[in-house]
Length: 607
Ligand code: G6P
Image (spheres, rainbow, N blue to C red):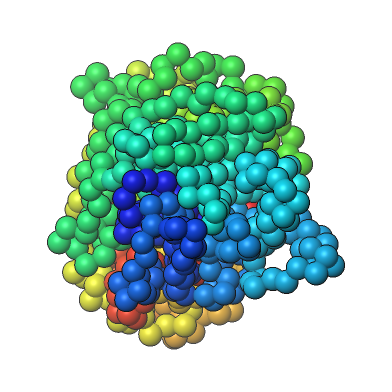
């Protein structure tokens, strides 16, 4: 999955394409490239690795041209080399692609049998050859693309540029997002509205199967049946200003520190604290008929879903199924009438989650979406849209989007419980009061940043780290381990504390730090028993708890991190902070690229 941008304009486009790629780098940073056409000449610059490498090349060898396309890559087919970097050029055709062409192998074999040679190992180059073949057979660029699109299986967003047609760009979308932008005497293609924000705010989202022909004067959009269609234009509301790190060293650090504010903002649209009421953005949605909830998500968002399962079952007494999106469709889930399928996603574009959403919709489920990008594909396909208000999250490792998801899910659980007659007025008031305390408690957690930083060099030496938690804090153990893996490249596992004795305890020795997440509450004693089983075997424990918990169980640990005393309901929001900070400081101590860790991308639009 990758980021794409195209401009057909009146002034040189290369610098603006590069600026667009900077806004798309969250989609991948294995390689990048730009191609422009001027006076019938196609010129291209490509570079392995981060965008700065391409920027250096462009500075050394600038490109002139008023029409061009550009790409930032997250490698799927073929190593992240310059040869595999987009744009790909075959004859007249230049092409960038986001997604996977699943039938590329038979197509490629057939093209090779016809005597065509390939310059890369990508699936993308197949598309360029197919379109070039149609051009050679005498079709126009528009007819050639129209003929090739139905031959492609898989998911794609494509942008085509033609050497002999400097007045033309063509875009196509199936299963991967693509937007069209309208400027003054210019038009644009982009993976999202953010990429186009400095160029225009006037955009149209292509629907599945759409393809669009862009000239300087306008855009003609066709649907999958090749009928000309109107897609509504919207004003995106995003500004051209580049989001910056403020006084922070990394976006991730800034985003961790922002959490009290953005969680408060998010709760502000789900709670009426003075009235002691939960209030969802779509009050008319009828929860009384919902008999089962199916939660589906990926990565960090999945762990938010895991916490929600505890809450929905505890408060609303509604049964919950939970799946990672890449498994959901393939296990043939039983989705009965009266089911609510709930999808959680920061980006709203994750391909596995989006495919799962469509599967659930086809199976007659009501669709609820907790999403941070309100213009995303998932947001647009929801019956019940539940936005988080985390603001743009740039660090690849999700932090503030996660805690905002938890805030929304807690409010949703309470709303559900009320609709089901499971929550008295007093109980609702109490839940609202506790949730309203979360931002201040998260602030108090952040105040322990220095202690956590001091602990980081010790953890940075480890090869393996274990995280333990119970109940809704078990997903925090999983999330803590994921954060550490993602950005410090240390092997880490999260376990349900009680499960340790069934295997992982064999790993324990003095070299494996064990991070125990144990807020005071009904599960504290049990978690501490499991922690003592680790200590009895020479394990080095870091205990994250409140003052009472540390007083009761801190003895014999190598370190303690003190959290404020909070109600168990909001403990996951508060205890997310120290595990994020620990991963952050360990990564800084190890000198890794915190905001853009190797092999990852923020938004994964391939299955
Ligand atoms: C990627 C990111 C993760 C994120 C996951 C799900 O793997 O690196 O940080 O949790 O995708 O993304 P979503 O946008 O659907 O929440």
